[in-house]
Image 1 (cartoon, rainbow, N blue to C red):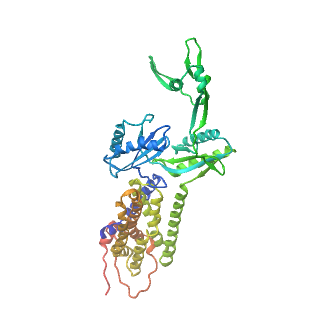
Image 2 (image 1 turned 90 degrees about the vertical axis):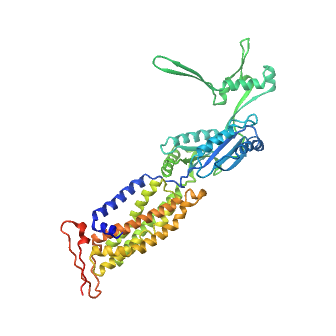
Length: 522
C-alpha cells in the first residue's frame, strides 16, 4: 500500500486523472438515475380476479374463492394465499416464495384454476395476472357544484390530458360509481306483443355487439370488414329491433321497454369541502421518474384551473413533498459540512489544506452514484437516509490524515516526504475506523422478508461513500497537499531541526522519492 500511495504522490497527473474521472462518471451516472419515493421492488404476487354478478359476498366465497384456494394447495413456490370476497366480486392474492420463478408459479396457478369445473352458473372466467410495480405519485381532486354526469365527463377529459404527457402513463379515476343501462319491461307489454323476457334479452345481446365479417382482398390492398353495433348510450338502444313479424311490422325495444342510464347503486360517495368530488390517482411505473411525473401533473392542474371556474382541481397526497424535503436536508447538511471543514481547518491550519480535505465529500458522493446506478437503485427515501447518515462522517479520515501530514511538515520534512510519512502512519488507524462502520452495515445485505428487499440500498449507499472517501484520503489528498501550497506555512521553532537533503530529478519526476537521500544531522 505504501508503494501505491507513493506512486500517486509522485505522479500528480494520475491523481488528477483519477479525480476527474470519478467526478465525470459520477455526474453522468447521477443524471441517469431516477427518483422514487420508495425503493422500486418488484412485487411477488399473483392476482386472481373473479366476477360473479348478482352474488353476495357469502356466495362468492362459497362458490368461487374456497374452490380456488383448495386447488392451489400443494403447489410449489407459493408462500401464502389470501382472499377478499365482495358483492359481485372476489380476489385471491397468491404470494410467491422469495427466489422462486414467478413465471413458472403463474403457469401452475393458471392450470390449477382452469381445472375447476364446478363454478356456479353466471361466474365469469377468472382473470389471472402477475402484479406489476406501481407507486402513487399524487392524487388530484376535482370538485364543484355540478352533477355526476358532467363531473365524469370533465374527469375523463382531464385524465386523457394527463395521459397525453410523455412522463405519465398511469391515471385512474376514483369516486364515481359505474354507469348501468336499465331495461325495464312491463308484463302488460309482454302480453300485448306476445313476447317473453328471454326473447328480449337475446335480442339485445345479439344486436348490441361489434363483430368481424372477415376481409376483402384486392390487387392493391386488403380491406377488413367489421360491423359496429355496440351502443354506449341508453338512447341508442331504443331503436334496437326485438322482432320482425311476417306481416312486415317491426317491434322495437322502445315499444316494449323503458331504457334508463343510471349510476350503480353503491353507498360510497366522495366529497371535498362539502361538494361533489372525483379523485384522479396518478401513479408511476418502474421506468418513470416521480419528480417528472409530479411536475407534469401539477402543470396540467394549473392549466385546468386557469380555464375552469365552476370546477377546480387540487393536488393532494403528493409523495414528492417528503422526498424533496429529504433532498434539501441532504444538500443543507452537505453545504454545512463543507463550510465547517473550510472554516475550522482554515483557522487552525490553512485554507488550502481545508479545501483539499473538504473535497472528500463531493468525491465520495460522485463515486457512490456510480455504484448506486450500476446496482439499479433509485434516489428514494431509503437511499437518501443513507446519504444523510454518511455525509457527516465522510471527511473524518481526510481530516485526520491531512492534520498528520501537516504535523510532519511542521517538523521540518519536505512536502513530498511529509505527505508520504503522514499518510502511511495513519493507514492502519483510519482503515480500521472506516472498516468498523462498513462492517456494521454489512448485515443489511442478508436480511430476508419484505424489509430485506430494499433496506440493503441504504447499506450500499453508506459503504460505497465510505469506500470512496478512503480512496480520496489515501490516494488523492496526500498528492494534492504535497504539490500545492497547502504545506507552505512558516514552520514553528521546535528546537534544532532535522536536516533533510533532497535530490531533485532533472527529467523524470516519477523517481523523485526513489532518488531522495535523507540524512540526519548529528
